[in-house]
Image (cartoon, rainbow, N blue to C red):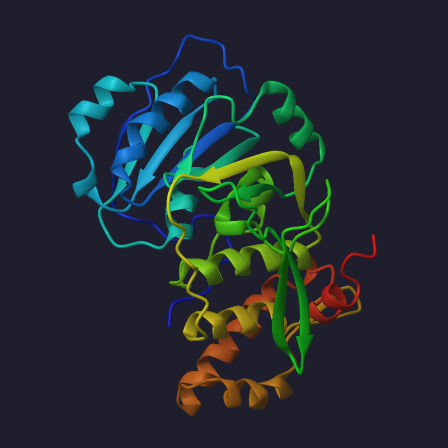
Length: 318
């Protein structure tokens, strides 16, 4: 089994990068934009035009399927936009890691091609207000194509070490949320890199998103909502795949199993037997997974500021 990443952009992805010509125009926004594409060709031109006109320091359009792009057409139409095309199958988190490695802005806005992206999405004033919160991520309010508010506040609870997440559409400005809906948000670039980015060994997007967000909280960072920051989907919304599997087991080992004590974290050896009961793997494979996670937690033990028990029991008290 491959090692759990402990540094940013640990995994290298074969890709093609083109465009990104330097613009002589002074940027209006102190942030970059990353557009994560999944093949929605109908909105692509409209969204790229909106992002190009908005005045970001850099705009990156990243996609996992080279068949969806006419390289010559887009490079001529949008010379300032950097296009990254993965040549191998990659999860959303891997693609985002790759895009973040190409920017130097202090903050970045993460978007999807399934959104309706107007040029007025982020004003210089709103950009400054979101940056002033000084958190790892500011998550937006999200609306469906018909204008219905989607649940964007996520609250953790647990019973017998089994994580439960409740959601709500009722939010207030600055309210904490466990993770950003569908990765969407306004991120602090350096905090993102310091946290190690998304775990490329987790193959499902839902668990990648939850893993990084949970780690951010355990390592002392925060994720909050903003009532003045909103996005709307342009089409149907696919439900995230949160089915328990190897991805959820990796999430459990890295986030739920560590115990924080004496200003450091560790996974007690005795927890192996509880893990083995959860795992569908054989004894020796489960033991290898457990040992690997213990090693990763030991390596990062002083970066933890709390464990899952404290995070959940004290949620929302601040």
